[in-house]
Length: 341
Image (tube, rainbow, N blue to C red; front, side, top):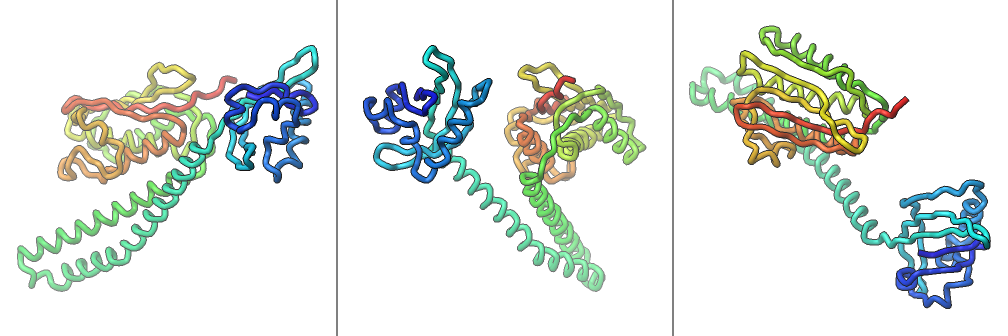
């Protein structure tokens, strides 16, 4: 903590400030606060300080203002500064809480680097696999078309399996690229009626499967702050899953609604009475390409729920699930509430 007067001179520091910057108290008090700023930033720092002091109603700035700071030995470090103004008999003073965020910045840089490397790797691998995969699919199709009679029953079966495997691999590559794009997609947050979106998706599912008598119970309206295309993708994946995993029930029921939650959040859920899952493996549900059912039981690649978690977390929310084998499943996700009018 450092306290500065209207002239920018240090009037008070605490012990942690002295330790952080390497100065004894007597070398700090009475000096211009610019002594704690690197040479390159000293020219503009007084204007920043004067502008804040001149604010007729100084407001706490809170954590998050990033500046470079300079120690007594000349070394510099990234600092996070929180400012607040105090009116005293001697005039307005500004108190600054200074935090060394070197380690946090390093972790952030490492994370961003890892994400960039992963995106590059994903893009490269997916595109490098496409050419040989297309060749494999093309030659398999030619084999089936031109040599069908000569293959015999066993050979025909092998060729059909190769064709199916190459198509599955192509789908996995597309899903991998889809996940990569989701992590970079721009977001435009505004009020969205999730109930209306869920109702539209339910109608689409019923039109696509007219022979099924699935009952939908959808709460409306359900307002939240979200990016419409991305949050519709969340609802699409969850409702598609519910539709798929209730396919063996004559009394299929799919619900969408909200449940009470604190901290100005909206907690939504999609519930079904379908196949459910073993809760011992709930930790795998939202991981890419993890499946708790075989493709013979229920088709899919295991990317839908990974997309759900990625999108919800990009909205600063949380996604989780509850279920039991043969008793259905409930998937929850939180979003920011719509601002009051």
